[in-house]
Image 1 (cartoon, helix red, strand yellow):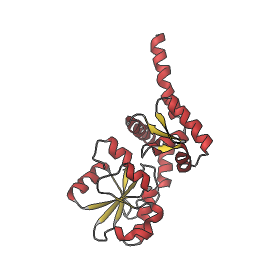
Image 2 (cartoon, rainbow, N blue to C red):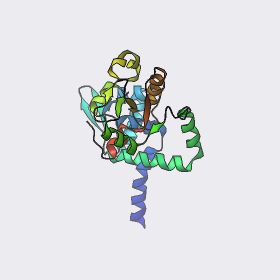
Image 3 (tube, rainbow, N blue to C red):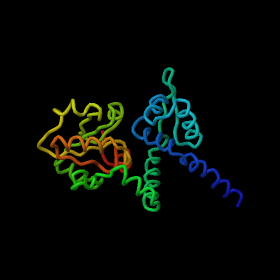
Image 4 (cartoon, one colour):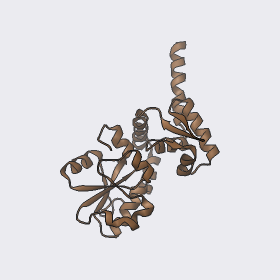
Length: 218
């Protein structure tokens, strides 16, 4: 059993690397696009030193790699299946941990207000895109959009939303999306646009989950 136990011990390195909320946040950001330590630290609210320490642990577990670009170290996911792994982790936690249900409920507390902010599933969004009934709104920062996005999505980063309303059609329904299931950018965009009279919902997941499902991206 020694060799088998060695295999389990080695496998546990991945589990230990995932066993930290900050590292999960870093992986979520890297699922959007490659990024420098400075960008990752800014996105996740960590100091550069703290982000570097977490990234080293992710690197030792084989979850991220790094390359040098000038004076910066640029990090990226080693394998797109990491997104699927995190999605499974989320599903198991939401199914079996009451605390997850409570926290998700608080994060999107007003989604059921008259179904105005109803979240759209992946299958439903795919069907509506094929029919041409909706317009996609990507509210992530421009660099993340440029690295990859859903087909024909309009990019308006959330801080610029009110200044770029002329890019959004009034006559069609809008579906906003961002980084993933716990990203609040699309939720906030939906709230703002609803107040301005737009018909809008948000995509329940995000760009990484859409891409990991093998659906078309640009």
